[in-house]
Amino acid sequence: LALSRLFEKTAPDPFVIAILLMLVTAALALLFGDFDLATDENRVIALINAWQDDSDGLWRFLAFGMQMCLILVTGHALAATRPVQAAIGAMADRPSSTAGAAAMIAVIAVLAGLINWGLGLIVGALLARDVGRSLARRGIRAHYPLLCAAGYSAMLVWHGGLSGSAPLTMTTRGDAQGVLPEQTVDRLDEWAQAGGAEQFAGIGLEQTLFSGLNLFVTAGLLVLVPILYVLLAPRDESSMRPIEEYNVIEPAREGAAHAKPSSVPEWLDRSPVIVWLLAAPLLIGLGLYVSAHGAGSIGLNQVNATMLALGLIGHGSPRRYMDAVSDGARGCAGILIQFPLYGGIMGMMIAAGLISMLARGFTAIGTETTIPVLSFLAAAVTNLFVPSGGGQWGVQGPVALETGFDAGIDPAVMIMAVAYGDQLTNMLQPFWALPLLAITGVRARDIVGYTAVIMGAAGLWMVLGLVLRAMI
Image (cartoon, rainbow, N blue to C red; front, side, top):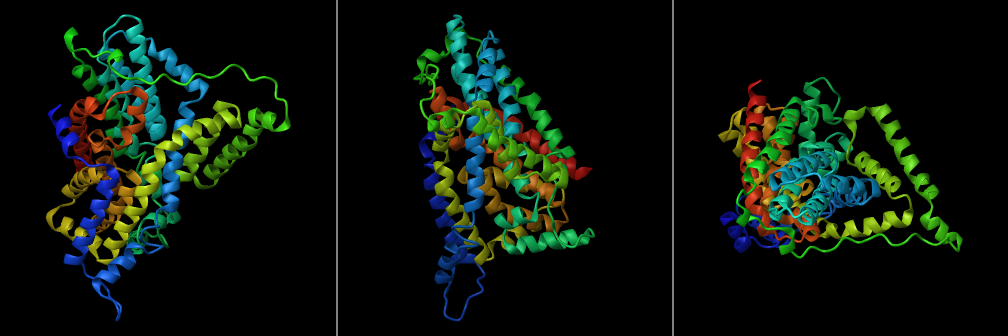
């Protein structure tokens, strides 16, 4: 709670933080950067040109930002389908105590988050809200903030799951080139050529998400997090804070059955046939892609296509699906505005040579065992200021990979080190909790005290995984 109050008093809006980070990067570039200047340029002009450059500056992450928006929107839409809503309703009546409820919510949120972070975030929020209502209806006093904190658990594991942006971005050369600077891709080519390949073609998911390291870390969190929530549950009746104390918005109720369509456009809006005309090609295309390239090459585009198809099928009509998408799209504002700033930050770092400088600094103070841990800690701190897995990978990925190259560390390990650090401090940074807060009616300061404790224990587990991987 003390930590929550500290962040509440000192942390600006994430958009403001992104602007400040941009200014800090510019200052570091001007003070310490090594610019390759044209004859008529000075350092300031060179920095501004790099910042606004179309390929390596402000607009570098346009395609990547769209992929991130689709992950959120398609996950939200899938969570709003009747089958998922029915499953949430059925599970809400099972727990009979705060401890049991928090453990169940954490398990389901983690599992859903491993499928898709948008799905996990929304399912966790809806389940926390409905469980709180169910306990109140049955006369069981519960600690509602703890249930909501458990609903946020998806964001502690998402980057090691099937929507993890850093691992998925690295499965193909084209995706990697869309995020990483040319000098880092050149280093990846050198690494691939050392292994006998002509050039870097991608890092398969079997080396990242399905590696022994990630299976150890993620499976451990699936067990550890629910146990911790059981231990955090208040035992004293007077400490309970039931859902009635919070301003929880009533969920939208589906209206009465539609009357028989009176026109062709109305029939098309509600027709499941139209849904299948899009869903079927999406699923067939996914099958052909996996057959041709293997499951390990699945990237962000394939994940988004799958979520889109499943959401369409679950809603059963174009109109219902678009209504769900419209609700989810409100959560994309931060991505749309902040990703260009991350692109500008990366452009300045490239122009000033800061990426190579930072990589050499890490190599100088670290060893093959400690460099992944240092990158993990750096990612954890960076996420407090750049609360976006995709944007953070664009900024920190080049530093982490080049540091790993200099120390002879497998790039897959460095990818997962950054991924773990990014997801860890989501438990302190409430940026991605905004949809959950809106659904549940709690405030960020109501849950961060609990998620901070979870963060500490989870961080130790992740460090253990990285150290063990280095020792093997």
